Image 1 (cartoon, rainbow, N blue to C red):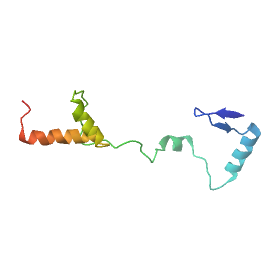
Image 2: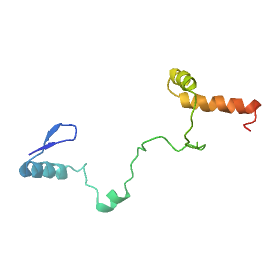
Image 3: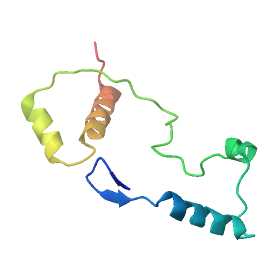
Length: 98
């Protein structure tokens, strides 16, 4: 039997007879003891995916900026939004927003 993945790759699955032979071989190995249902339920993934939560959160907003300002920051490469934030923080050191 063959199964096609979303990406288009084709995988050949074992027949029932082949699957039984594989399972019997695995069960006969003393070093490969199958986990119980309770052990599977207690298992936790060792790898955590994604970025860890930041202690300092930022607020998502929509802001309109001059095209030339955005183009110059974007031209500076990845992290341009962080640099815009840093520039605004620096400006606030010497100015009042009101």
